[in-house]
Length: 383
Image (cartoon, rainbow, N blue to C red; front, side):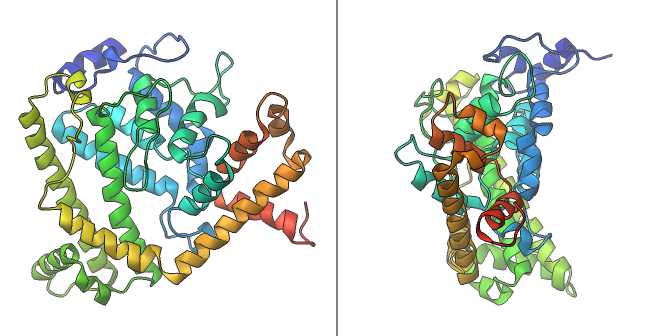
């Protein structure tokens, strides 16, 4: 029978620069470790069983929940990020358990209605220490989850919490939060999750955009990477068409970027002669990255998505409507906090009103936020 000590010994087969679970900086609240799970496996399980993780099923990626049940949600996106990140970590001999835990936690702080919900809360909270989903994710795992009698939150390890707060992509800009204020780069496991997140949302937003009809395949002729993979698929399967062709092209796009990332990251690791996780922190530039040859190809695809999907008039309408929903709900609660549920009202006795309301709204699903809006603003809706 394998025990935790045996699992930790197995980790010695990982690269010397991988973060080993036996070398964790630990948890905020002292706990006995589990007999049969490493600390990062335990973190992963706590995240999966959390309320915030379950709510990701009904939180928006690009399309509002009621637009259709095919499109990605925060939950399906999170699972796709974890799959891509673990594939990269495995090839680089990094700690897959830690990568999986960070992947599953990286979007826990997201609001309903995607980035428009976050924009609304950021604007409202501007004079109250602001809002961003990285910091909110840390609040979720440190304070807001209520599952244990001995401490608030999930009491995750330092490394998973750092992965949440230092999560960085073109859409995510981390801000310093004690005790994660180091100017150094995050450990490689966090960097893997960051690049996996980019690969996942670029390609899967492309998939959803085509399925929705907002993107036309003919328009994608302007995207070189798409055209390259389309030619490869057609050469291999001359009669392929429709949904299967789209799926195979998206699959090829992801595979090409993951492969490129693995090769380039391995070259970077050798160039910097990494020997231990502490070496990574001292290097100002990202080590887990894509090659210079792939960068303009990905940028072209991202610019296409920005112009043709994210700025599509229907998506802009959805985003603007969602912004108004969130703003209106916040002001209603701010005007009369007695309308908040009793458990949330209890927090008002010790915490600042704006932050309490912000936490409550950020935790909503799209569906719950829409239901709340109807109760307040539609006269014949039951309250």
